[in-house]
Image 1 (cartoon, rainbow, N blue to C red):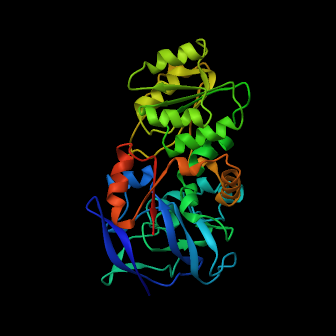
Image 2: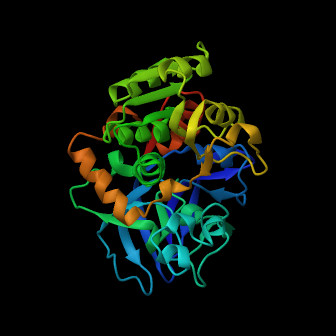
Image 3: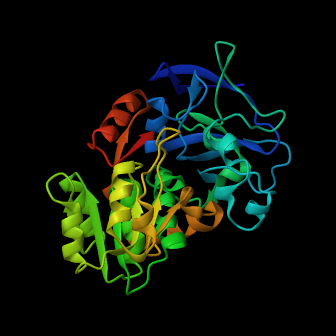
Length: 365
């Protein structure tokens, strides 16, 4: 057993506690966490909108150093630096086709923490099991027992405290734009919500040089960042009529590629209404189960497409190295969106993110 501290979610609160980590089981690695980003999906679990057993450890943007490896692990060794992302089975038809974000067992493996290999390592508190394995990692702790498939080896010189948020928020935003919407130079692109996911999508879109790149948010400071990251126009939805401004900016044509990162049915409906003929609206986010988007069937008969996306439809082993390279080239300025906190400050970090004080909190151990 390895002793450490973790932020244990219990009754809607993150309480820092002493816990014990078992040795990694088959296909798992014990990672000493250096840093972990805080994501809106974590906030959804804290608020009770996403089911996860309690008491439990969440967190899914971990970065650290491998301490021990379990049986059958061949691609990682003690001392390797790794970024942690989502996990997948690796053997279903979808995984084998290169789309592990749509793994047939993605939901129980990642969000519910219920599908684990036999002999998987447990986390305990005072001898009682604490739910873990969130996204195959549970990184709000000094250690994580992570799936090998959730871990991507990075260079020995990697700054893990800076790169930690790549595992979910940045990967989702960048991948959704790069892999799914795939804008070209003649496209009009709109990004709804400029948190870490939205800003990463803005950066990805700017690298494709669309004719217009419009960012929409409620916070002027985030819209200023979007402009610095490549947006050609911004709209403050709290002070401006979004539909009227989009019509003005597009000459009444509408937006042909929209990305809604907010998880809000109202925002998604607005994006559908503002879409062009044959326009696509891509939605991500994790609102509570049962959340529905109202759609006027007559309104979509002009070929409009409403599409969902998980984790940017990415393979972390492929995209994370590309994102690290872009950061090294100065094209992915992660430091501009990050704010660091200690583990004991994690409740404040979550609150700051919820209230827009911090775009991307990073817990540094």
